[in-house]
Image 1 (tube, helix red, strand yellow):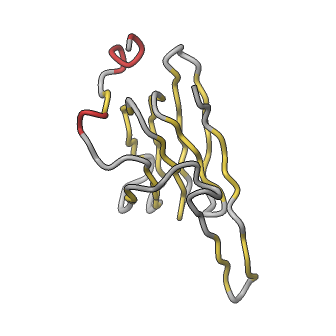
Image 2: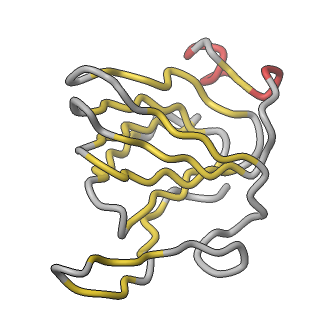
Length: 131
């Protein structure tokens, strides 16, 4: 099983002109990107996720605010990652239960290896642990 890990994206530039970072398939991203989505406009401590994916991987990037990602493996091992910079991303393989806590006005961008398919989701935690 693949394990979650933090990806450091390249950073170019300086203040006050600004910075540029990027992610490339075959570089920092360990899969072909088939879907990109973003979550924004939330209140403080909004919890998202509450599911796992049967297959595929994702990279989560905080483009603004603080985002706490709580993960549980099928064996019950728990990990926590804090995303608060667009210079870092979290590689998240399938078969990890995720709960994502977002600060007010945070922006979470997700690069996914799979197109949206409701059949790829496990939304019951006990079913996830017993899969």
